[in-house]
Image (cartoon, rainbow, N blue to C red; front, side, top):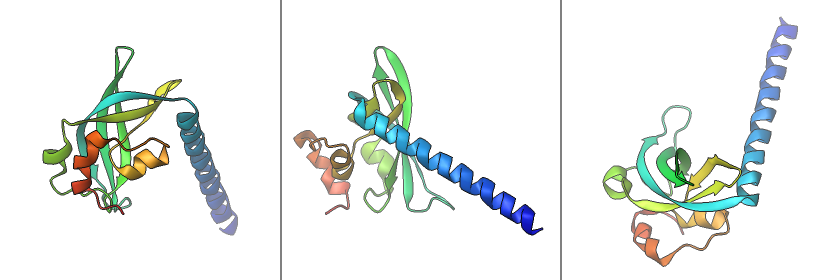
Length: 135
């Protein structure tokens, strides 16, 4: 029984390590090969059990005539899900994507996300600050 538990835990740890490395590689590629497009917010999903406090913002964008769908995770402590659709759905925001893999993309809405990617927060999006809980 103990050997079975050890094997299960070992497999879980291996998958966790692979998942973290995969995510870090994707983030590094996005930072190293960054390109920009305009994206339209298509909706969101509020976090549920297991992902409380996180909302997934869905968006679409075009690269060289091809349409892509993306999803970015935002903390609902920074961006409230209350009335999200009526405020943000259909609005256009910058999308940062990996030039070698456009499926690796994030939509930039809050100042924190802009800062994370080293991109200045544009004056044209100052209206967003009314709905953002950042300092």
